[in-house]
Length: 131
Image (tube, rainbow, N blue to C red; front, top):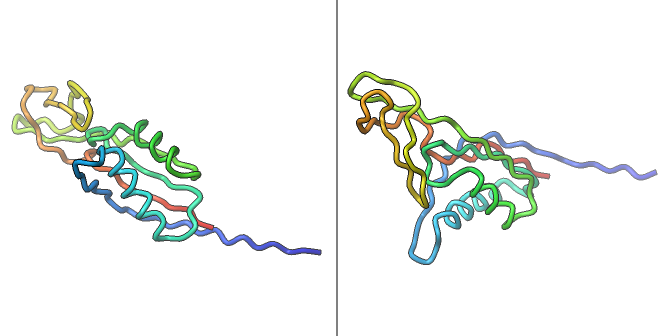
């Protein structure tokens, strides 16, 4: 009779991923490489959970697609709503005007001014599961 033991570890981390851009890498590639490198520090990865802010420079679906192309991991990506504060007194979700390659244009929905971002502009590796 054989006995199999599988050790599974879950690392709950709050690692903010900063993509180091260079002329030879597209920003998707930079984010993807940074996430993969950070996750692999924890062992034999089989699943990751990434949170992408609504105001981050990469859309969640693009990031998930690129991670699937580069790994055989289960990749869970969620989007966190943006939160801004404006001089007019508004505090809440911004109005996104346009999302393009490596940029997001947004304003205060109250006065149409340029608010300060409080939340939702980062890519965060939240969890890594390893064998």
